[in-house]
Amino acid sequence: MADVVQYKLERMVEELEDLEKRGIFSRREIAEIVKQRRKFEYRLKRPSPLKEDYLSYIDYEKSVDALRVLRKMNKEEEGKKKRRVSDYAGVARIVEIYRLASNRFKGDIHLWFQYLEFCRLKRNGHMKKVLAQVLRFHPKVPGVWIYAASWEFDHNFNAAAARALMQSGLRSCPTSEALWVEYLRMELTYLNKLSARRAELGEGVGTLVRHQPDPEEKQWREENKELFMPIGGENEDYKELDVQNEELKQKMDIFREKGFNILQTVYKCAVEALPSSFSLRAQFLEILETTNLANSENMQTEILADMKIEFSKEPGYWDWLAKYEGTGSKSAHEAIKVYDEALKTIPSSTMFDLYIKFLMDIIGRTGNRQISRLSDLSDSDIDPVSHVLMVFEKAESMQCITENLACQHVSFLLELGRLDDARDLAEKFCNGELSEAVNMWVLRLSIEMKRLTTPSKADFSLVFYLLQNPLRKIAVSKAESLWLMGLNYFSNQKQYFDKLVEISLSSLIRDGGSDDGFSLSSAIVNFVLQRNGIQNARDMYKRFLSLPRPGLAFYRNCIEMELNLASSAGGKAHLVETRQLYEAALSTYDQDESLWQDYHSMESKMGTSETTAAVHWRARKTLKGNATLLT
Image (cartoon, rainbow, N blue to C red):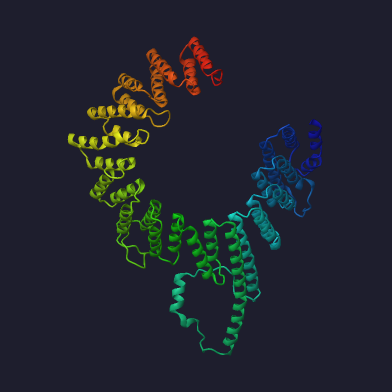
């Protein structure tokens, strides 16, 4: 190992001498560079070098080379342009390290791309060789074929090689959407370059890029048509010009026809390879819209028809189609028509949710929910607020209402300031099909609580009556927000707080405690601790501990509470209570390693050596020697 490292360092002598001779690095700096390189070389010669070793070496060499270039720019005399050994030795060394790393970690595609990017930036002539290697090792990665074709097309200006690479990639990865889309883009880009070249030579009339005229410019041209007409009427010169323009137009039509044939061929092959891909067709349609091709409208109609046949049962298709119809010069009214058609085809809650989200986005763009008309719905006068409410009602009538849609409906009414309507609707949902919807109950109770600014005893009784119904029916694990809302609201009302505790006891007997996540008993104990002190909190948690399954989360909460008090007050009573809690928890969860670890840690910090050793011995005996975490 040492001989190999020494040999590599000796090969650097010429480069280092040149750097010192030119005054780029001092002798002391060169000694430090040699020291660092020796360290990195020994790392690479280990039996199993890590990828980080190679990358650290590369980063160091890049920083050294960057410093060399900077100092060379400051020291180099004018007229001296001959490259010397130190000018290219750093890049060659980095390439060699990349080669070693890629040979050892052939499956790391990210490393290969770093290698390729370095070769592309430095233009050191290794690009083709590295591309051939990565294509050999990763023929099933579409990004590699796209990268290679892009380099041939943009850097070498070799369209034939780029085309061959893309076609080879499509044979290796026929189900890659990105490859099909990029192949089409490349072919159309090449055709567009040919058309632009003809136009520069005076043999064409433009490119294949579709021109989007400015509406104001278009209107001005229509209003001032006479400015673009010949002053003396048509004469022979203008007739000859028209003939020339017609010939140029015919040549342009040839390019447009070729572009259409390419798109049609690639589209058919791509659909055969990916018959169930919706995004592929959408991307092809996007390319078609931005390109000026012959028969583009017919092709657009064909693609849309295929998409409707294949994906008419998917809500995502209708949502995309509605947004597609509502963009550009098309009105949002067309999008609403699409959503209405979608509801007839697939009446589902997902479709209603997408429809309402679209309408909300339109209303949000106006900046005011109280508007009476939308300016962009030019084809028809539509009251957006009424339309959204109509869609909500339609979802309910078609039995597609969900908890999310119902909450959106109530919240929308609240934003409109229709408090009574929102309250009645929430009551209707809670008493009907959404009687166990937690979020709807939270919304209804929040409406009632906000309405009662200075609640009386009757008001407290009404809110408690509403609250107890879902608390008794819904599982504790699902009703976390309801319980917290009730405990907060009645925290200063002892009568109703005690009733909530009784309901919680019966609910926990039915559902059991939680081992992780939300713990109702822990929340109640914490409320009691803040309001009435530690003694009442102890009495409360002992009531919950007497239940059949208190839950590990509750044990941990009580232990944490006692430990906090023991560390702050320093009393032995808290330590005794903490030990009793650990013992009670371990009687049920004796195979929980983390619980034993916490117990052992507590004894090592607050107990004696005897109690610590006893816990350690019991843990090893119970866990059968697996108490490796006890240190």
